[in-house]
Length: 113
Image (cartoon, rainbow, N blue to C red):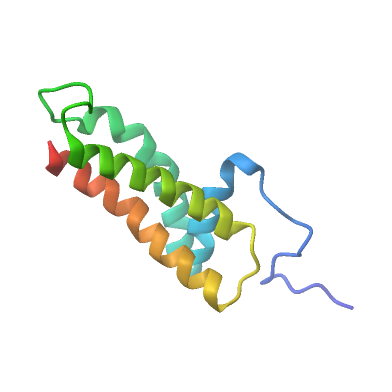
């Protein structure tokens, strides 16, 4: 049988620490869009320290920010979990929703202050 260059073989899996980025890559059907989202998902982590706009450093007295943080943690875990599943209807939708929430956090974080 001839290998299909457009399909990743089942035995090829990324390392566990890149599964969230792999899940974001798979959630976008367009190849170029998925690649751009994969690069942005890792690069956006480097911008987080520069987007902190609050006058209070800890999240102790900012309950909305606590909710945002724990939503990011749950989103991150869900993207990682969805990346380990086959590309089938419920998992693709879960990956798309959580990928959107992942990027939405980094948009909302500076706005929350």
